[in-house]
Amino acid sequence: MATLTPVTYETLQWRPSLDPGYSRASNRGGAYQAAIPAPIGALDFGLPRSVQAEVEDASCEIVRFDAELGGEIAPFASVLLRSESAASSRIENLTASARAVAEAELPGAKGTLNAELIVANTAAMQTAIALSDTITAEAILAMHEALMAGQPRHTPGRWREEAIWIGGGNSPLSAEFVPPDHARVQGSIDDLIAYAQRDDQPFLTQIAVAHAQFETIHPFTDGNGRTGRALVQSMLRNKELTRQVTVPVSAGLLADTDGYIAALTAYRDGDAVPIAEKFAHASLRAVWNGRLLIAELRAIRAGWNDLLTVRSDAAAWRVADLLVRRPVVNGALLREELGLSTDHPRRHVDPLVEAGILIESSGRARGRIWRAPDVLDALDAFAERAGRRG
Image (tube, rainbow, N blue to C red; front, side):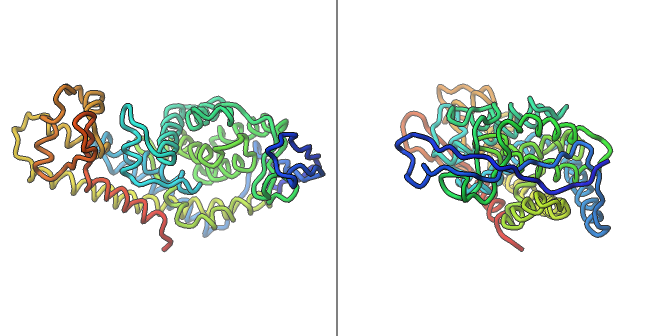
């Protein structure tokens, strides 16, 4: 077994682009230091007893939260996954309201740029869960392909073939950190997969280390943070810490992004304790926040039972159930999700409008959109709690 060692560095030459769009400063060539990630395939290390206890407590809370929902998986699994996607995107400063994201998800809709990117991140998370039976390089590529769909500049689903850097402007010469040369990416990923597939490690610690190693490799030209956090969800499911729902770990990390980045830096310096500790704290906070969200959504849905006065077999009840996970609807979504006729969608939603559950958003005679403000407010409150330190 090997213990974690700091990354080492190699000297490479920066040969700037001849593209006239580059600034004069970026056209200056020279030597820079690129990381060589330490292999972790055979990694074995111990945590301080106090941190180990925190990791074990967090793992138990994740399992307990996953089991708590019982037969209510259908409405809440997608809500938690979308909340995780939004929080992971927010770490990258990609923000949008719950309403904007829900509108961007509607069939045939065109949303704001940030909302569209968050929707793409949801697709990456869904891919991560769907392919979680085995952690493979191909699964990671599929996550990235879903995330970066429609952005050919960033070669969706392919390892990078160029240098990238963090900080430092238009060249790696003054960067804060330069990930490994692209020729090292495949070998480093293979080593990461070997570690991730092991079953002899404390699972939450293993997930934290695998995530930190992925972020050190930075195998794509863009989307590394979001793909790396999708990998976290894939591993949580693969290790059976979760079986049914998404625990919004990114929402826990969001409360202290500076600490999260500092823990990744410490990992590159050879200390995995901070990232393990950060994942334990983030998981506990995510479970706390997730429980509050689920409780609020349950209360909202139960309150609607007193407001709706239609027959028990009316389609409005099915629409009400749908609103818990899809709080903005149009005719196309009602057909897609519930099989309802879209010739006259108002007959399905008018009872909810009259009850004050839905509000029409579009103001158009055709292509009407309705939203459930109570659910959207609950989702925005979840996001606000996630970004608040405390």
